[in-house]
Length: 312
Ligand code: BDR
Ligand code: CA
Image (tube, rainbow, N blue to C red):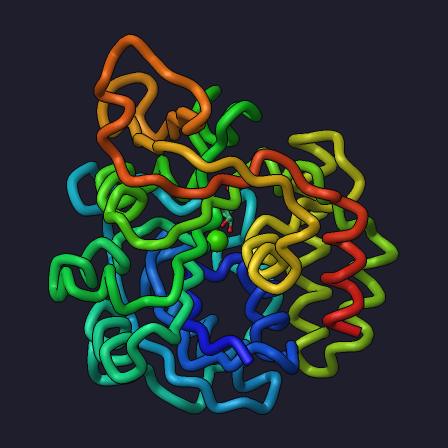
């Protein structure tokens, strides 16, 4: 099995990924850490607690970043995920509370308790991982690997022409996390935009997921309306589930190894710049950041099939 900590800002597509992490027989979900992003931090934590409860699982949830490290926080994108993050589907209050320790403390404690074993999967802005690195830089050598849903290499952005939302929401945190020197894979829009979950597939998942499925159905309806109006797509891109798909089924993705940098200021803030290790550049600054893997493409149909299979 794969022991992992899921760092999230739920979020419609986060909720689906959480359902996968809870359901997959080979994933051992050690806990969820929450960050602001799609919603404010309190809503993110409430949603994480509630989603686990609806799946009848008691998973520790540790609350984390309420704002970006340096830049000013911008309002949560309520037109994409709804005011409550789950498409404004009416939600009961969770009956459990978050851990008393913070998200970065939770990450550091867990990683140090099982050196070499734990995978961190981050699908929101990267403040919690950046804070964990600051708390204990030694975790760089003690995590098994880090998988980040974020960024875009050739695909262009979804917040600005060049920036993807999770990186744009905290570029300074992203710069630290993506260049920390731990084994890292970036699953960005180059892969997630190849994957479109259709309406019938969403209905199938919702129908199979019991109480959690009711919330997924409500949130999907809202998300679908956004995709239809804003992007002219019938269905949605399951961004955050793609990070788990890469982890469990890497053969469905094409990756490249190289150096990654994040633009932290100016018009291109939040852009991820990638230089494949196969290329040489006249400007030597490119070779300074540690090598990482980035997803350049995905077999979208196969990824979507894996998501549907896992959840039905
Ligand atoms: C990412 O941004 C958020 O809106 C989604 O949950 C996903 O993590 C996609 O750019
Ligand atoms: Ca997310």
